[in-house]
Image (tube, rainbow, N blue to C red; front, side, top):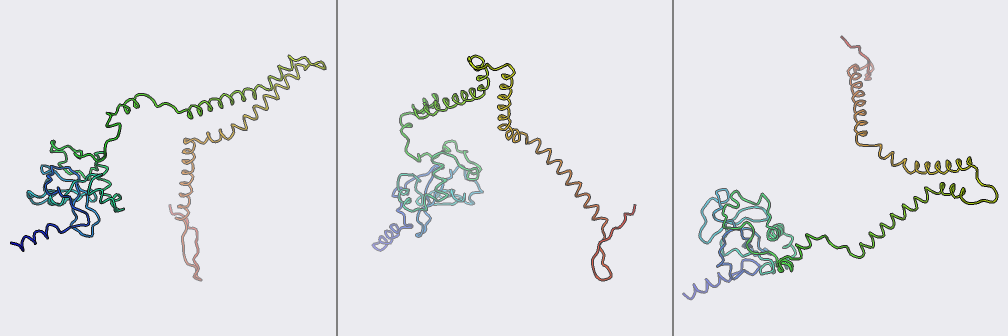
Length: 303
């Protein structure tokens, strides 16, 4: 009796991996769809593998070929979507912020593991890929599709009942003083440009009319000179506008319709050239001359 007691103690205290096992995992009962850690039963493993428990009512023959025992459950790994039969004592809840999750984060490769990334995303959003879901997914309505335990602690707005979030969604956000100054500066710039352009376009007319109103003691301008000055001013402005608009017109003239039309024309020309080359190739006959050279000669078609 004394020897058997020591053997049982040795077997129970022997660690399976480097991570510390959860003390309460042997008494935990899983209903289904919980995110858990699975003991890989490998001493060289740095952390346990994340998986999801399949509800017993949603298990079919494609997943497992035999009946499960009372101390067994079926899980599906997030990394490769494979099923596995595990004992309940080999599972522990996947809970961020608690052990053994905090102990596994000491390893750099833990948070980069694809299975861990998918499990964390599921706990945060409740979304999973279609490939991961099995045929009878959601048959057991008593079990919610989202993980029952929260993944991250609630934020301040969630604790307060999200009063600020609703008000922010209804009312538009207020502009900061910097944005207000920027918008006012832009308006000022636009108005300044319009004023400058107005003065620039009206310089010739202003000088012409002003010259008529102002009294010149030497000699007032005649109507012919006024016409010449206005015509020269308008011609200068028109020429300046043309130089500015020319590249824009060239850019706008190349529309998609015109490009497609030109492409069609080029394709027709290419087909004609190809047909002509094919006809010439059919008429050419390659033969060897008497001295061994290869020559080409024309052969008439036989109708």
